Image 1: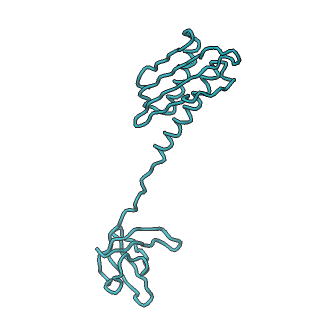
Image 2: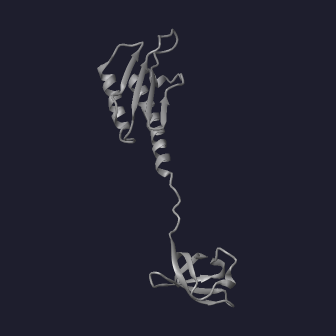
Image 3: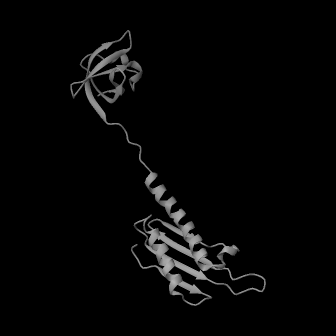
Length: 182
């Protein structure tokens, strides 16, 4: 983490054990994202009501580049949160899930790679059958069909014509697609 986290207690006395538990959970969050720029935790013990137990509320604010994660905004009455360590665990588990989602979205965004266009020369064409062969710069011959042309210019394509194409490996050898006169 790039900054020191801030832990605040409200409606209760400061506790070293509770703060140590919070710091341990914050350290765990650092495993999921390397660039946490800020983290603040508010641990609140509301006033004791006559019919309800003392339910702790834990609010976690985490900032990473381009995103803020806030957990614990709702004032739910979860009686398991009568134990401050359970309230801390639940809030940090929710923060961890949100942080994992942020990381997943960042890493799953991929730009589609476009195949590299190769250059070659038409070696021979069988116009009646609608196919031909391209001699690539690497010396290999690539089969292509009329349907592989990007233009309607099949009749103008003859031996010796310069073309660009995309290479593929087929069952019977290399073939070309996206054939374009150069």
